[in-house]
Length: 203
Ligand SMILES: Cc1cc2nc3c(=O)[nH]c(=O)nc-3n(C[C@H](O)[C@H](O)[C@H](O)COP(=O)(O)O)c2cc1C
Image (cartoon, rainbow, N blue to C red):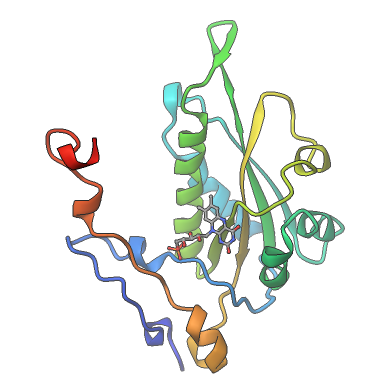
């Protein structure tokens, strides 16, 4: 049996971390396998326990499963480039955040609604990986049409779309696909972590 350890990767952490962080990546070759709704709920459940400012939990998820009437509607919101590969995933999800939160009886601007939703998105993706699925985030969707089609309420922002599916195993990829289907690398930690403030060269 071929396992995912066959897939070449340049992901070597400079400091010791849990492998789940480097094992998450965004494929574009998916098998077309349906994602059972119960599995998707486990991903949302992981997102549910994310931290947020004042525990305001501003994230909202709307989803469609392949082979349901909502599927073509969601798919049609993606840019053509994303649609090309997302058509072979098993679930499409839009992550929305509420830009206002309740403080006492008042609705106030939530300063970190996007940050909080971002935390939820990573929990979602990591849980998906643990279950053997992959999540690929997409900023490429029709931002004008999406709020109306998805019935997004006022004061809510669509943060991103996510395709969830089963990645094609390395052994089953064509040579051409293999060029693209490798987890990418990262800048070194020294590029973005600074003791005592930003270095003068970046100010
Ligand atoms: C908010 C967001 C928007 C993205 N938009 C797209 C997109 O429209 N199309 C695409 O193919 N990948 C998209 N990506 C995937 C990124 O390119 C990818 O996460 C990045 O290259 C890091 O690779 P990795 O996820 O495999 O670690 C997006 C990712 C995020 C988080």
